[in-house]
Length: 150
Image 1 (cartoon, helix red, strand yellow):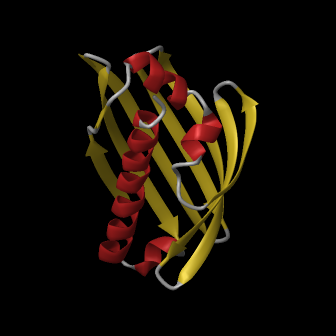
Image 2 (cartoon, rainbow, N blue to C red; image 1 turned 90 degrees about the vertical axis):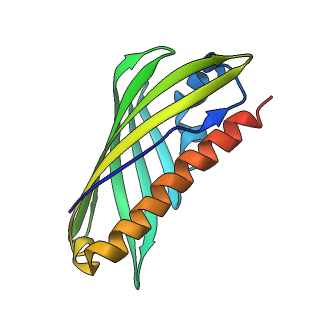
Image 3 (tube, rainbow, N blue to C red; image 1 turned 45 degrees about the horizontal axis):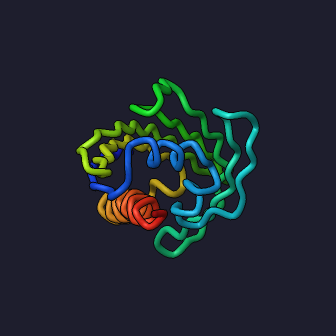
């Protein structure tokens, strides 16, 4: 099952401040639902353990996260490959920071997620709603927390 989402929240800090937070894996992980741990492998590779409730089940994913196409403080691509017992989730997110002047930035993001295995068998409508909520909540929370850093 393939799902695509996008958004463009505005934050009330400079592009450089948003960029600094995007490059901080612990700050980013604090906005992600169900993250149990983050291990920094190197500046562009991370290992994340995350548990997510999907309908009647809770699944714990081990995610390998890689940053690529990194052009500071403009854009990056984040690939997260996750595996759990009988399930897999692969997400590719692209982020572009657009300066709006006066210490404001538009955080343009798009994410494509592919889900397979047991979790995907829950049904497209249920899974899409959960995935949309989790993805949008993540970026909304990230934007809110970045704006509060002043």
